[in-house]
Image 1 (cartoon, rainbow, N blue to C red):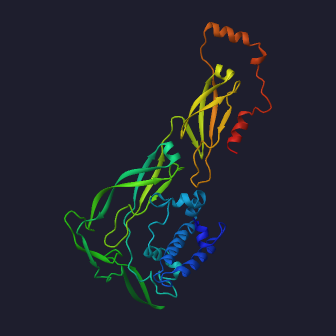
Image 2 (cartoon, helix red, strand yellow; image 1 turned 90 degrees about the vertical axis):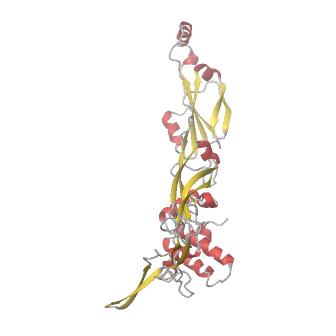
Image 3 (cartoon, helix red, strand yellow; image 1 turned 45 degrees about the horizontal axis):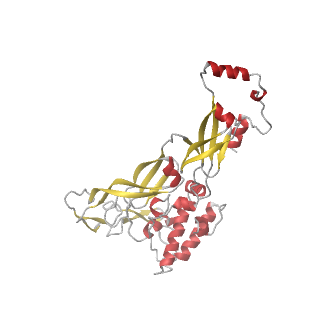
Length: 372
């Protein structure tokens, strides 16, 4: 699957001017007026607009570079900021400056500039809480959303003020001559239509509140404060407008045993003094279930055991993090007389004398390794 850079034919280091120039070239190549009835050209035209919409915005571009194409677009309903809801009117309206003043397209039929403006419904926003396991493995969440829809039986008619264009044109005499300006129609709000028949229970725009169950596809590797977009699941718009989007803010709940750091996970393992001396095996929790790991005899408190690939998956599909198991040797707070006598006798035993080896790293070295 081609990414946005490949679609526009530019490198990741391309400047804003180069990206704009590349998009204009693609837009001219695949413009509907130049390719009438060509569905493939129209699809390429939309893809180029989607690519430019992201790469021309510094914040969206940085997010795209961080997540990668698959995670950013994330397959339809659960996508990140993708242009799944793009239609031809949206593209011409949004990128009118690319096509040459006023939304028209210099050299062609001006498809976008003279068509009526399609009103978009209001976006809705919800918050979805996930367990760490759900964030690690991906999950489909079904949520109930209250959204506005067109009432059954509502009808609309062409706006008498703008005759369906959605715009009104004014001509003014200035010292530079006669100047023509266009603005959204105040009667229909730019929709080109007004309500003709209002059913019982509908609001002033012919809408009614409705509860709908929406399935949100959440990809593996998401983090708290990320936002997903479900295209077309916001409020509907009156007449022939397009529906808004459902914006989903992600919250990953704290885990009882695991701490997340990027794609790596941390787990505190407590073992007894006899277990540290003699060695043992311990069952620990991971995001994919419990696993048993060996603990070698003579292990030191502060030792970090790395379980490769047992962390969180990368959202852009580039591998999986590790699970870092921090070994803590538990020192008993109270002892029986026999136990005290035993440890007293061991004070002079050479085996109980601290003897760090060259390979035993200090605490600061371990911290440095963790963040390198």
